[in-house]
Image 1 (cartoon, rainbow, N blue to C red):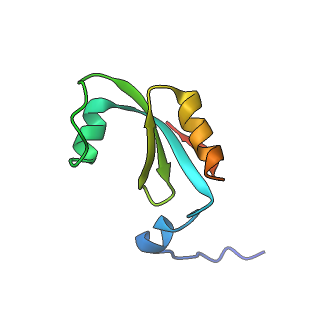
Image 2: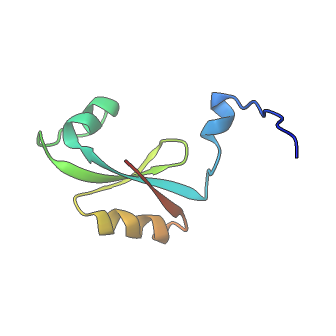
Length: 83
């Protein structure tokens, strides 16, 4: 076994898991609006569940974790929880 380092660019890293993984994360409506300025206005202070593609592209937004999780399975994606 070697301890050889593998260098990967941010662009390459963004494609790891593409089409196979989705990231499930609880997110506040204020943070969501700040990260995605083109979104419709949301009530301030809401706690939501967001499902993101491996590259960070939003897929689904819900007020229920189970709904967001089901969205991953419906799209044949393996969900990974982010904290």
